[in-house]
Image (cartoon, rainbow, N blue to C red):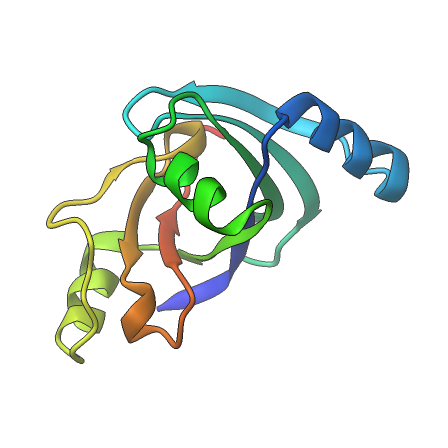
Length: 142
């Protein structure tokens, strides 16, 4: 089922400034950047380490590109900080259905495309002790 912590998503107002903080303070370098129009974010993935299952663990920094995006709304309400935790899985669809069967609300009926071409879905935070939880199947080409 779940194999690792894929990433921790951190919402920020200024992506470039936040990237520089993580670079200067912890020595983390940007592995990948992209704009996800569907989710309304500009993001940077900072690789922390490789994992035993062939994946990696990241810090994902998220800056909204529009106020009405989920991250934009979250920032307006909560300010900067941890937005979600993501767990890696070999089968995001199968595992999300198994978790749905345990009474947890899955936010997408079908997985969507996430960072670096991954396949993702989210679990409702009210069903996960207040934590927005993402399930991720990595794209093997990344």
